[in-house]
Each structure stands twice: as structure tokens, then as C-alpha cells.
Length: 497
Image (cartoon, rainbow, N blue to C red):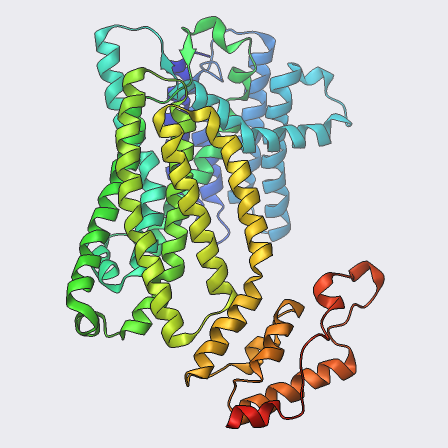
């Protein structure tokens, strides 16, 4: 298979995927299935997987026509009869012909088929559907090492189209997260993306799934027919930067717009937020924090994947990637800073929870990973990124264990309660044994009613052994030490003074 044929297969699979999205959406599609099968046969002929009708070919090529004809015949039963039982059988027959196609691509002759090969055929078809497209995409998207000026210009245009398609998923995800983090951003995005609906996204998703499956299944005879490199020029599977530029610069543009919205909030303050979004400052801080954590994770993933796709490419591509990556790292500090500011406001008004603290820890971990990526990969030291991340991740996990997040939550909320804020006893009692020493200490500062309620609940735990180790296999230090704490008889009375 040559790169040109691989690109032809990709285009045909996309065409069948688009047609399938239209034809298979009916209620119990019958004619739609038949038309899809016919389109598949046409695509197989156009790609060369099936010889042209009437042309002489090898016996295995003629057998492929028998399989294709059997699939069309089975699908024709769907419009010939209306019984649901027959519909099931006809659909199973179509799938059986598809499995036979995958088996025939490996074994060459139907005459060698046995009943024991039936399950193998199904497994092979499933494998082609799930993984077969990757090798065709690899070949079709690979960049030839040599070529004339005309092919170079065509390649640049192809790279820009591919890059635009690649950029769609991360940009949509990042825009959705930034919109969730800021009502002003959401309003702005809604004006520019009014043409995008959940239905449209569903259509795109189905087209992508169908195209992937069709590409993997239909290409089996061509993928397995001799070594791929025999008819192809030397290939390098390393994306040129042109294919990555739309994603990297698109994300930078999104974060630049987000920076503008945050500047307006900074200078406008609470009054501006209330006027434009109808939220108080505290509600504004609460609504967007977790979205900002997620979007920084998306950036880290995009940068890492982009670096892997770029591979050991040309020095010019590496330089462009360093510039684009550095710009993106600079702009992603905006949501990171915004997230920490929002969490500070959030804790002041609503208190701290384990989920919020873990999200902060995750944000810190992602920020460190992004910084390490900039210090290593973007400076041409890719080999240091992986080992460094192992060390950073190990230290991050160790720090969380040493810090005891639940104890921090109790301390922070106890300090808020001492200054007059409410203390959610029901929430804190749901925490693990890690929080119990802090809860014993909280009795001394809580208001009398809250103190008595918490004291009663803790004494009930002591008497019932609810937090004690159930057996030696479940032993740990916090559970074994869960009774430690001071329960003096006048602790609640002292809190009333």
C-alpha cells in the first residue's frame, strides 16, 4: 500500500461515515443498511480492495466479490421482509459477511474455511474495526522524505487541513471548560458557536466512529498484502509543525481571550460580576474553579502529545514548537492564578472541603509538570522529562500523605468557626479517621450547641467502635489511634465562655 492509496482509503472511509450518519439514523433502519452496504462495496472497488467488475484477477480477488455480493444479498432481505426475527437474522448475516472478509484477508481462500474459523473470523473483524485504521492513518499522514516542489506545496495544504481537524477536539474541550469557568466567557463563546449544538456534536462523533471502523475493516486486504514499504518511498512518521500549529496557537488565542475577561473582572470587581452575570463574588469563585483545574490538565496533555507527534523532526519544526509551547505555557498561568484566587475567595465564604483541597493539590501538580515540561522538553532536553516526572509525582504523593488533607480541612474550618462562621458537622463526621484528632480539638473552640452535637457524635463512635479496625488486615495508624484526643468534661462549657 502506498501513501497515496492510504489517503484515498481515508477519504472514502470519511465519505461512507458521513453517508452512514444519514442512512443509519432511522428507526430500525432497513433501506439505510442496504445503501450503506452498497456504498461500502463501491468504496472497496474505488480503493482497489475489490477488483473492478468483470476484470480478471486472482482466485482470492474473485472470492472477495463473492463475500461482497453475499453482504449485499443479506442486506437486501431487510427491505424484502418486515418480520423482526428476519431482520435480526439479516443483520447478523451482514455482520457474518464482514467477519468473513476479515478472515479472508488473512487466509486467502474460502475453500480452507472451517467451522472452527468462525469465532476467529469474528475476532479478526473486531480487531480490524478497532485498531486497523491506525496503520492506514500512519501511512497516509506520514511525510515522504523526498518529493518535488509541487508535492511539497500539496503537502503543506494537506498539513493545514489535517492540523485544523486535529485542533477541533482540544479547542472545543478547552472552550467549554473556560466557558464553565467564567459566565462572561460562556456568553462570548455562545455568540460565536451558536451554530454548534449537541445534535451537531453527536453527528460528528458518529461520523468519526463509522469512518474509523470502515477504514480499519475495508483496508484489511491492502494492509496485509505484502510489506507496506515495498511500494512506498522512505517515510518518516513525525508530524510537521504545520499540523500542530492550529491546536497550539488556537489554545493560546483562547487563553488570551480569557485573560481579557479576567482583567475586566479584576478592574470591575464584584459590582461588574453582579451586573454582567448575576452572581456574587463568592458564587463566581465557586462556579469555575474545577473547570480551570481541568483546562490546565488539557494543556499539559496537548503539549505532551504534540511533542510526541513532532518526534525527532527538523530543527526548524522544533524551534517553532518551542515558541508556540512557551507562549501557551505563559498564557496558561492565567487560569492557574485565577483558580488559586478563586479558591481563596471560595474558602473565605464557604469553607474548605477535601474535594476542594485535592483539586488545589492537583492544580499544583499540573503546574509543576507544566513548568518541568518547559524546562526540559521545550529546551531540547526531552529525555529528562519522564524521569523528572517520576520524581515529582513521587514527591507529590508523599507530600499529600505527610500533609494529611483531611486534618487540614478540619483545621481551616475550625478556624473559620472560631471567627463566627458555620461549621458543617455532618460533613466532617463523614471524613475518615485522619480527621478525628482535629475534631476532638475543635470541641474547644466551637459554639456550645455545635460543640455538644459534635461531642455526642464522637462519643457514639467511641462506644460503637465505628472507626476502630475491623480486623488485623484493615489495621492502619489512624484507625489504631482514633481514640486519642482530649474529651474533658467541661470542653463545651469552655467554648461558651
